[in-house]
Length: 223
Image 1 (cartoon, rainbow, N blue to C red):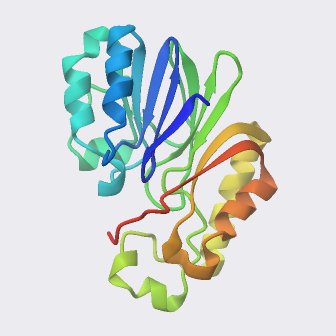
Image 2 (image 1 turned 60 degrees about the vertical axis):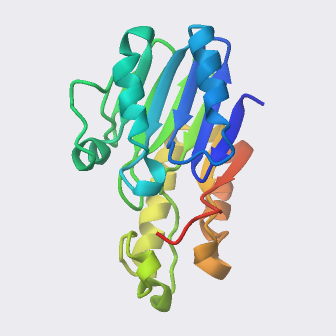
């Protein structure tokens, strides 16, 4: 399996020529250095994709790494809100991700879609046709009224359940129009949603055929 779980919402895709690191935040088991060292040794292209600015999806080390190794083919692909909120020099990223836009690199094409929170969700299509979806914080955040009042939920958009459902389903329709099937989908399964934890994932899987579903966000700290 070329897709490897690191922690929380961070995954690594690795093949002989390419390394993609999604939403790196923490690495408590020390998995990431092995991939980065291998990429440096084998002269792979490295791309760090950041879906949004939230603390649990961004580590400033990736900015420093890309500054130091830009000439070696290490690239930063942050969302528009990450650049603004994390004060990243706009000349550093290979591209800034905005929903509705497509980014073409020598190794893949990336399409950015809306999120039900901040930032973007993305589909990467590799040259061999393999598709990788990373949701970021795009989910059906179907919180009860009591959950929305909790301090731990303050980072999410506060809308009614009906508004959230409509927004999420509309994003699914946009993704499905371009990608009725996906090879890999990295998607939040967040225990803070309680009995509604699987609502978004099941709606996603009903709308889009997915070969490999990779849950993330399920070890969520109380942010």
